Each structure stands twice: as C-alpha cells, then as structure tokens.
View 1: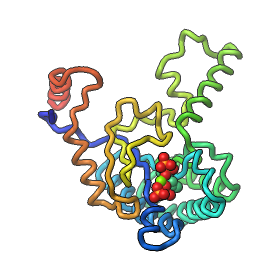
View 2: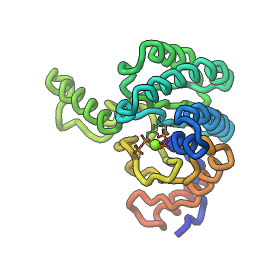
View 3: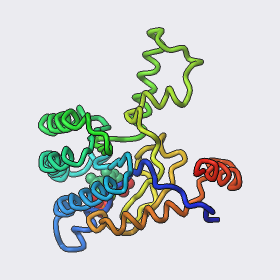
Length: 251
Ligand code: IPE
Ligand code: IPE
Ligand code: MG
C-alpha cells in the first residue's frame, strides 16, 4: 500500500553504477569507452542531488572483486578515476561538495591515492553535500575489518565486549558518521547487491532500473526519487504507526 503522506526526499542516496560495459558493447565499442561515458552520468546525479538538497550521495565506482577483471580494464579505470577527480575537483569546491573515499584505498595506484587524498582534504570543510566514493570497496571486507579492529580494541582493554552494540559497530565501518542510505539505486537491471553496503542497507529502499549507467541522467534519477517517495517504509512496524509519527513530525 502506498503511504498516505509521501516520504520526504532521501537524505542519503547510494548508487551501484552498473552497465558501462554493456552500453559500449551494444555499440561495438570497447568496454573502456563505456566507462568514459559514465562520467557524464556521475556529473548529472551529483548536480541534481546538490540542487535538490540531498545530504549524502554514495557512488560505487569499483569493487574489491573488480580487481579480478582483465588488467587493461583495471588500469584504464584507475586512470579514468584519477582524471575525473582532477577535472571535477574545481566544480566540487565551487558547489560546496565534500568528497569522502571509502574502501581499501591503499590498494590503489599511488597517483590515484594521492589525487583522492588531495581532493578529500581540499573539500573537507564543504558542508552542502557529501559525495562518498566507494573504490576498491567490498561490504564483507569492510565488516571483517571492523570486527578485526574491535577485537584488537577488546584485547587492548579499550572496549568491553558487552558494550558492543550496532552503533558502536557502525562506528568501526568506513561509513562511520554517515547515516544509512535511504535509497539504493542499481542501474542495468541486475537484482543483487554485489557486495555493496551490506551492513548499511538493512532498511534501505531498493530501486533497480534497466537503464545502463551511461544513459542514466537527471530524468532517470528524478524518476527513482519519485518511486522512493511512494514507498511505505515501515521498519518492521505497521503503517498506521509510521503515518502517525510522520504526521506528528510534519506539524
Ligand atoms: C560498472 O559497469 C562499472 C564497474 C563495475 C567498474 P560494468 O563494467 O560492470 O558494466 P557491465 O555490467 O559489464 O555492463
Ligand atoms: C558492481 O558491479 C560494482 C560496481 C558497479 C562498481 P559489477 O558489475 O562488478 O557486479 P556483478 O559482477 O554484476 O555482480
Ligand atoms: Mg557490471
């Protein structure tokens, strides 16, 4: 059943930017051409999010498992990412956007690491919106790293095991301090998470479109947001409870 009062805009939107390879192959182009074209879609969703007042936009750019792709494709992606950061940095600063990188950054080529660190540092005082770039990121890896750090903290006597709760565990994840995504968009039709935000997506609304990432622009983004606003987010409760709270909050 659709909600009686539409949900507000999502505070945090996460996107699995998938389908670059298929976009290119359908046109007889190399997969890398598809990755190049994906850049325009990134710009479109960042600009639309900024304008609409979305606080956090997370973009899954490269997964831990993507390291297993052919070396040429991996190298091309790393180069594209670096050039993207360099060329878009000025716009990000101008638009008041802060960049945060999550994932196993140390595994990236030194030049890309450097570019990421510089961009994150240069934009750290911007407060209009945060773009979270997930590169060399995997949800399971992130959870294992958090468990390892917590185990170490317990061994050092800094944490008592019975004080570990969801909030504390979340503070050991790469996304510490970032609210869970309200909406997760996946382009190009695949009905899976592919190791993205496993912990964070417990109550996230999922939206999958067949549109391939290079074709996903503002109109498609707005459509996803419109779908989200029709959703009835119950968090395990019943609709009447949720509606009552929403009306109370709106007063
Ligand atoms: C998404 O597009 C970009 C990355 C995973 C880096 P793909 O490269 O996965 O494109 P498809 O899914 O093969 O079409
Ligand atoms: C998920 O897409 C990762 C990114 C979009 C960065 P994949 O193309 O790697 O996912 P699978 O292989 O189809 O599950
Ligand atoms: Mg893919």
